[in-house]
Figure 1 (tube, helix red, strand yellow):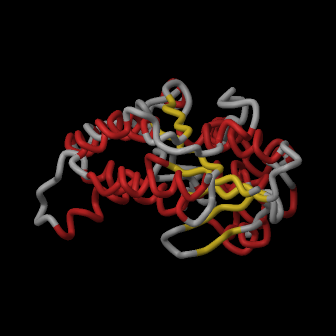
Figure 2: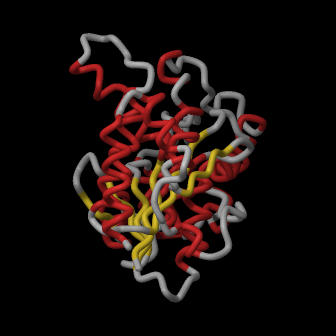
Length: 276
């Protein structure tokens, strides 16, 4: 079996701004929600029944207490922010496993779900659907891979090495050194992508660097590494069978009506019938 783990927050952003190209800047109240549901349903219609979606129920997490500049919900457009919770409700009504994260982030949920899934012997491959470079640290050979929809690429361990110049396990160290503007931490001044990869390939993890490499900047680098390291201990599920899609719930009909899209109900019912 193949398990598909989807970054719901990324997909919501992608559909929200993608839809604007066709609506002259007017935002349908559930336009992005419908887009994400269609994306998940397209996967299910190809016969992939094991899937889960992680979302940021709130944007802030424990990392905001560690670094004052870490990303927050400030600046998110109200029309987009208003669709986060309806998305979670709609996914659950459609019968899809959904993990709304509060203290942790959606990325932590994806990392945790990848670990749990990969530990199941019946799982052939785990696909993490997100272009977020943080998730590259979860890649394991060909067994756990990252699917980048933007570039239409499946990134295995070799792909991570080609893109970043380091092993997947060293991605938190790499990001600590070069920074991550999307997450709001700057990295270590004077260290770019090439020099970061060179240092990590020579010395290993930041904790193994000779004292003179970072000097007084070591403590800051370790803080950034903590920000970049995804948690894998969220107790999201215990058995991969919990991720099997068995069709929409009874309340999905009313949810589809609320969303104003009857077609998605018909499609989900047809997909459920074909799976029997």
